[in-house]
Length: 152
Length: 193
Image (cartoon, rainbow over all chains, first blue to last red; front, side, top):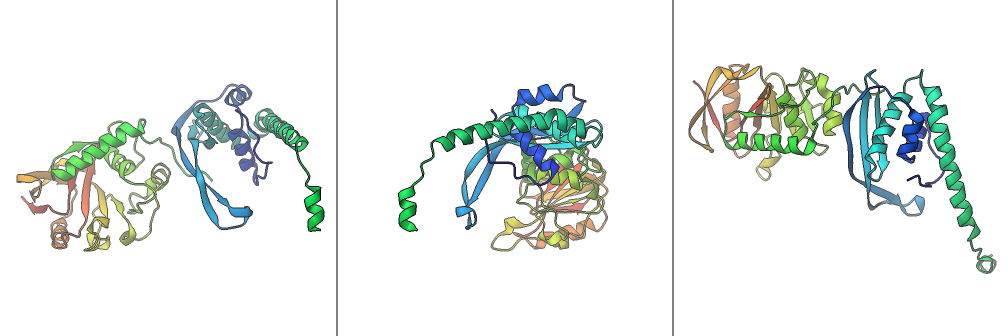
């Protein structure tokens, strides 16, 4: 299920497309990828647990928040491109599709078309959903004017 | 930037790792007996099926791994599938992979307080069950057992005798060839014959 995680803070183009794929819906990725070349699965898709770490206030000492389920997969296309994917939850099909998309996106010839057909529409969808949830949440926001005045 | 990982690991990780673990366990319990491992595994060059299967089963991110120069082409595959930490010096390794007999004195033999932290050497040889005959005796063997190995140098016996004097410290060796494996635990005595 597509979710609404914090805004895109990715650095490289590859980090960006991996982040978009990890939050996408498996059916949507498959529909947009269309016909795919032959590939071998090198590892997985296998679900497991990863430790989520946090920092108090974003800058304190790191602590272990808890474990979450994640599924990882690595594929190799017959042309020799290796793609990886880690997705939250147990969606093995999405992990495999995302790994395949990651492999194909590393081919400089295919990359522009794939970015246009797969990544950009998915990113827009995720952004729209995030904005919708943010708007709903903003409507219920309470401003504690009284408290702010007292402190000032 | 991708490392050269061309081959998958175990097709069925749970079952195959368990079967390989059992083979290593039996081989250690009865030194000199030959067991099978890695029959269904496409091992990366220059490793054989049994060698690769043993490493997939035993090595992970908590066991530093040392490779000799001949085994180095399989580095990326091992790092990816085992999550192994590769160490440049043999004395810090928990596991070592060698295609020709290394100097056993270079590996950690453990301490008297913790003899179990010694290294295990996975030695890939050209063939098992043919070649030079060795007579093994010691714990796990009611009668002396014979094991034939191709490719061990003559100074192996001397090295092994030195390893034996360290007991309870000392190295354990797993010999692999093709899809066969045999183990030489530190407790076993070896004579040529």
